[in-house]
Image 1 (tube, helix red, strand yellow):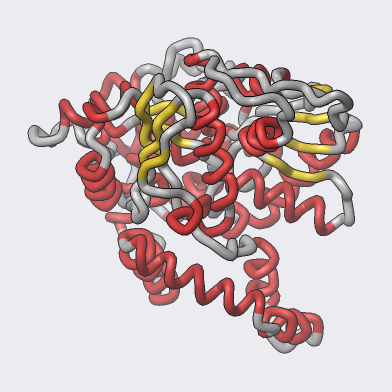
Image 2 (tube, one colour):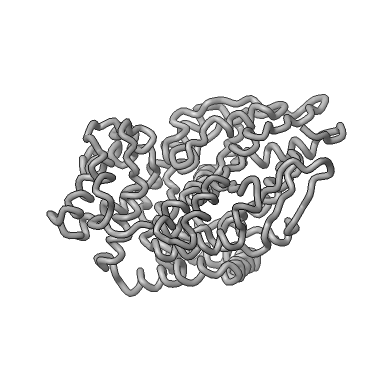
Length: 438
């Protein structure tokens, strides 16, 4: 569990060799060319705090906030520095210091981190209220007020970034237990997520369908806790640990062959419960077992031998580019499996996207806390996407999906954003031959 930089195993801080291999991979260093805005520079600041040579200041807090947490530096690092643990520990220290405290900030952190994302039923209720707002005409009225400059510009930016809430949530689309129509090969648990549940519940349905088509019995609890990723990334390790225990209690890892995540950011956190709960004698072993069972959906499908869809006589052709979620690529090291899945699909021409693993600027709430840098990264991503000639962008994280979709909509681009698992589910549904076991 993230504690304090001063209490952290010092060898983790000493791992950085200051070689600079991380510098070309860091979006914030690329933008500023400042050493303090590089992974190497931030680790030096963290070490100074750990050594008692520097207090936690507003400047230190601002630098940790400016970091995307994309973990590209971890992939590039030859020494294997665990930057994620350092980064989350630093943010926890910042929150304990109170250096960023303000009444408004405290109010929103309380409402989101301590209330809504700790109570899944209440979160769904809030989602339903947003759905009513979006469909009732109030949203259009509010937009007119923004255009008349009656409301603050910040509210208009937040509204533009807010997801469209689904008509039905995951529990209304997926039964608690679903079995394939042929022999059962595996028993898996499906995690439905928070944003994924509210805004992309159809992707959860698609995920269940592709698992069924590949011989998996799918268990999907109707009400699931937040995984704790949001809390861990924002300096609340105790809340993250509490949510991890809830997840393990609800889905005991011994009961399943795999626990499936279909959101890159959530999955990266979900497969590190062992570290989060390593000092909890009641949960340490369970958490390590959980980590061994956690699989990204693309990883799992390739691991079990995903069945290629039967090709229709004249399958629709599309040119697809793939954008890699930072935490799927760098946090989970799942890079080739989504591409392999896309290559199974009839009619799909997969083209490589330049800088496919470069952050799109979503990074959790980064588009809210650092709007200028987020917008610059999004613009860079969109330029590469249009240069690729793709008519479809595939990605596998709700944050990336929303960020890029919003950017495309703003410039009137016809490029569609779809998740790979949705394309696979569509192909299975279009099959004219009877389904068979792999």
